[in-house]
Amino acid sequence: MTNETSTAGLRNVVRIYRAVSGEVHALRGVDVDFPPGGITAIAGPSGGGKSTLLSILALRDRASAGTVTLFGTDVTEARDSTLKRLRRSSIAWVPQRPTHGLFPHLTAIENLYQTAQIRGRTGGLEPVAALDLLGLTHRADAPPSRLSGGEQQRLAVAAALTHAPDLVVADEPTAELDDGNAERVLQALTKVAAQGTTCVLSSHDPRALRRLPRVLHLRHGVLSAERSGSEPAEPRQADAVIDSAGRIQLSPEALKLFPARRARMQIVDGQVVLKAPEENPC
Ligand SMILES: Nc1ncnc2c1ncn2[C@@H]1O[C@H](COP(=O)(O)OP(=O)(O)OP(=O)(O)O)[C@@H](O)[C@H]1O
Image (cartoon, rainbow, N blue to C red; front, top):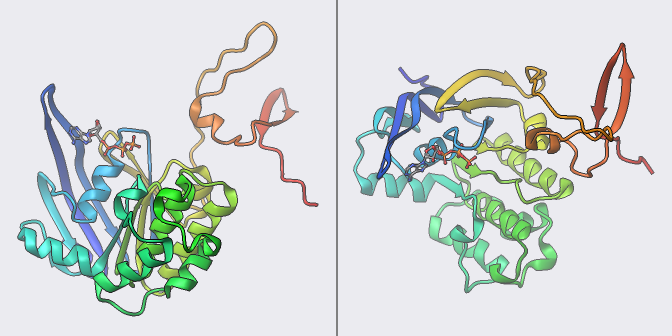
């Protein structure tokens, strides 16, 4: 049974892709609820099934087995026309490559007005305020093709928030962004969540994972233990090679913790600890 208070609930959801090379079991029995007004990050390694889970949640794909309940309705077997109506009225999808969701012939601000109009809902962020919240006021008159990747990503988030969706589903919404703009996106999602919108995003981004209240890990299509963002993540270990000059090569996952490529080293009780240096407070 899906928790009746949740915006969305998946029960024993399986997704099998049939490729030329054979079957790919992208989701292997996922059980999860997304409560109204909550923000949940889906983390996990590449290929773990994050995009597949988000696509099913955003009604852009169907489960091969299991049950999907959205807004109190079992939509597992719903007709395509019903899914389309729900997508349009209640769900904002922020794709990994944001230009896919934007109107290329319209300016940034026109994109927001057009999205709000097409969705036919009121109560979302006003387009001028949405641009301001995402730090795009100075780009209001530029079409998507003249925006940087990060600006396009923020415009896609702004568009998602202009029509008061019940559910925002965002695939890696901070991936292309510097710290300040990643923070803007997280603040914008936090703001709409406080107004009751449920937000679910996939992320590899340690900045987002540290900051968000609920983080679920998806690995090989299986959701593992839930932790709140404030709890420390389980320590992970990996071997690293030290060359004769004392240089150490970090794994890509560890390297992401050092975006400025500088580290502060401490030797404590015979152990070497590497930390990203704190920002200069001045
Ligand atoms: N259309 C498809 N046809 C066949 N296999 C697919 C298809 N889409 C995804 N897969 C496979 O399903 C598995 C899960 O993919 P998915 O894109 O959901 O993972 P992900 O966690 O989002 O990865 P990433 O972080 O790299 O985006 C992978 O093995 C992937 O190769």
